[in-house]
Image 1: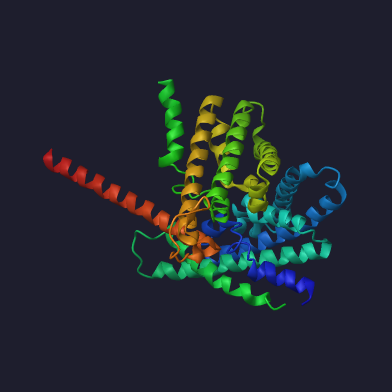
Image 2 (image 1 turned 90 degrees about the vertical axis):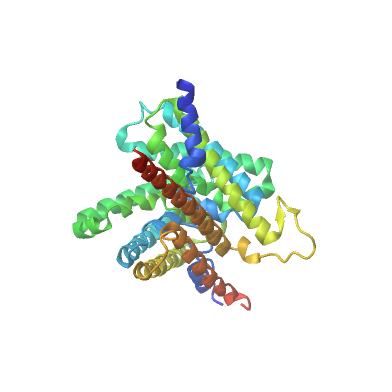
Length: 192
Length: 214
């Protein structure tokens, strides 16, 4: 199978960042209470992931071969400034969207899925195009998991659930079942 | 008086404000590396080192860090300690380092650590900040260990790689796979909820009885 397609599908489903690698769980559990906000947050995260992938590639190729021990510090500074930059950009271009995103924008900095993406892409030695495809797959996979959980949570609001299990405990158990469902994708590439 | 102060900061992280079970912070490493007890303990120790070190440094410099760029300063301090932990583990226990893989660098993005700097270390003197960090990191280590131990016992029939049951034990493989992490933590949180529920009920009963008596 085509290598790029493989990378995309793998990041999207088989090795879904949230449900298999446990990355980005804070927003996954924290902001998945409504479908709309979770979709929006997912898209913003995907965008930051794309920018980070490009920056990580540039850093890896030109800077970090000379000083590999600075990798972590460089990545986190790049991510923090990218998020800051996007925040300013959105505020300038579309104040309405900025208000709608609210607190979620700055919080993307501490989303470990983004740093994880940069580190995984480095460890696997992805090139420029591969890195972008990987970021796209991971971002859409993150959005998918977030939207799925938000949908399930919205449904569960209306049903009769014991007070004891409501809240994080139930969300984790729902996430566990979702994760089990995603395990089904693991066989997708065994023959390839 | 002074002693009880720091004791209070220490003990609140272990139990009352446990970062994982009560505050639900730092979930990513919590679930990702707890498929065996040894990985969980290694991760807990690394986080312990990073949290105590950065709390000490942030608290020492708290009067020199400008308010506007404090988050960036915290993150750079944390990233430095994580880099140290990363290379130390690589040198001392290469096998564990390999298994933890990308999750050691990801300690940087552990929201519990940044949260402690923002909420505590940047406001209090060094001694209290370090006690708070030790308590929080100890609570985190405890949570990691309990989750790792439960998952390893159920999913592998072993603890720290030593087989606990006889030949006939059928490992519950799902527990060491990703879904097991979510399910185990869900059930533990459920237990904590139940505990709080019972305590509230008990307190309400006591209050009721006191009102009745008075």
